[in-house]
Length: 408
Image (cartoon, rainbow, N blue to C red):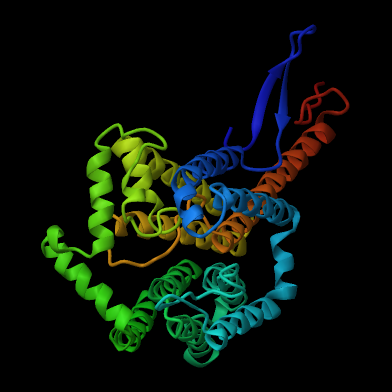
């Protein structure tokens, strides 16, 4: 099943027949389950939020369906584009992403007292795109320089500039979680590409020394870090957001109060359909429902890593591993934050949270991973066909593959 193979029986002949599907079926099924579950939870968590926005009760849910459909279209297109072809648009893609990040700083859209980090009234969030683009860009960049990867002038300094510019533009929004995610993904890809671990350690230390002061320059970073440390020592003194999230988890118990029956989302849980949707999941489906969601993400990561392992080349491995790791990190941070295990980040829960940028970019990334699995399966099929052809040539005269010795 992992290779997309099914066996059916003909009704009349009774003969078995295998059907080859050109993609990773388990990954597809996992994504479908997450999407359906996400739409259900967005419908449950968003109708009150939609009314408070001055819209109809199904406004956010309707937009979420639209974003899912758009994301699926992009995923389907990406699944049929050979992942090697992205080399042709690599530089324009990265430069375009940087221009969008700069546009966010220029637009400086405000919603209440906070900067939205978005464009066009909240429809586009470039930092979400930047995470996926940095994985794609670095995968090609590292793959093309694997022979000089540990060379300071030829590889490490340019790499530091690429990561540093992206990191700084995201931090200036400010978006601490996205900036840290970019650095972590860069370090992981460096390791996978074969860079010396000492060099990676030096880069990470330099990044932390340069980046940590930025956390305390902005009031948001200081407030969130102080709230996390306080709440870690005493959960009763956590921030208001975390207290309401933990309240939802406690109310849900093991089995939950039922879909649509949660009340924390009506009584002050911040951003219930987006950043805090895991708290709604925990209250309505209980600890078991939350565990089910964690299990689905674990299965998704497992399939992504299997695809990365079986990729036809190192480029495919870097892409599949990097994109899978990014999706896994996003899920981990969102869920860990809402139970007080990490400082508040404000990132979306992939496939589940309401929002267009996260949904479209994540589904497109899944399409790229699907294309890598398709290329791997085609390579295996080609190798089997070659071996079969050799056997047929050896046996086409009906005799054994080894010549018979002449007998007197």
